[in-house]
Length: 192
Image 1 (cartoon, rainbow, N blue to C red):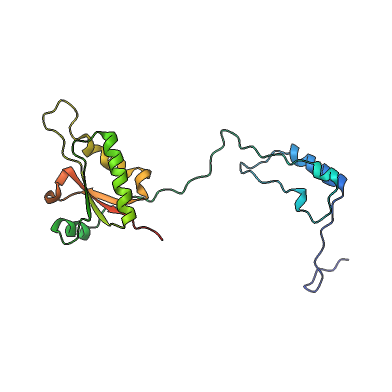
Image 2 (tube, one colour):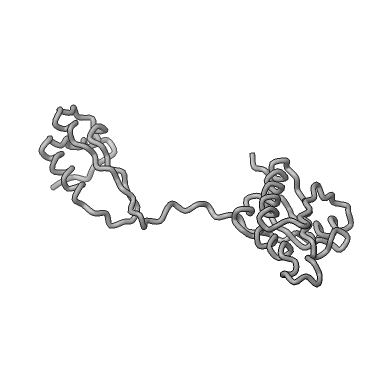
């Protein structure tokens, strides 16, 4: 009858594979198809502590090919937007909390306004600003085209993942700062 191992017993050594066993194992690895979708890196025979023969060195490890339809590693999700607090909104509207920068998008095309907004927000983030004002305008009244395109587009742009790493949240500005034609934007702090 075998006795159970005790703490004082020496650890068991792994058996060293012969060249024939190693070649057989390599052929099994090449023919096997994984059950999981994750790809594992095959261990190379060079990593084993045994001495290698020229025949063993000639065995070429197959490169792991990622299938075309395989999902790529997930990127970390962009942080969610958070509305401004009641106290912050009140302080901004009364002028006790300073608006550190302003961007006026009046008269710009959507493409130009998007580039300007992106550059402005990234600079504000880099400079460590907290609150900025983005003026979209209310749109032309009585024009044949759609009214207030930037007024509708800018909140949608700010909600996209492209800007969420820079923007904490945004809200319509107080009437004294432009009302429905402007937005208070809170900039995310720079992480060190």
